Length: 237
Image (spheres, rainbow, N blue to C red):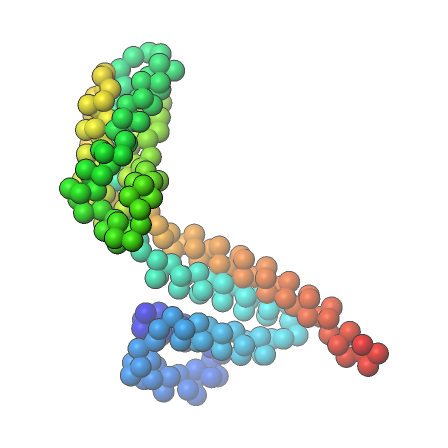
């Protein structure tokens, strides 16, 4: 959080940073920022930027883009990373529909409540959720972290998403074993992978989304302000 706050100081105008930047950085070191202080830094910087470029739609768009990207990156920084482990299973047979039916039935068996609770117990999954949520809700959350899909020509893809990459791999191994035990004619092609980079957050995608959305909102804000300004300055209104 402190590193993010130091980086966000770059949002302030250069003249302000040259005059107060060193003192402000020292203040951040002495008083570790929380989420509210981070939001205050961004808001103050945006206010200064808009004050300096209030007459320019490009200025509003640029300020909005920088602010949008910064806010989304800040949100991504405090969002737990999620890793995806993949396993690939080869299904024997030439009738794809029959394979899908058999694997679908096997998936229902492999993902039944008792099987998932056993996996959660073995690997200590969703401890916080299990302490405050009903068991059925936790099982549903587990199911939402699992994906069983079909590839070409007769591939069965098993994915599991979790904040810990090693646990994601171990759970995927358990799922592939459960699936292969529930259905015949399945051969392990690629064992569960150990993810090395998080699938989420994708910082480039987050920053790009923030830039585009912020620029559009900034430009819209400028047009709205220009439209409302004459009405506000008219004595009759």
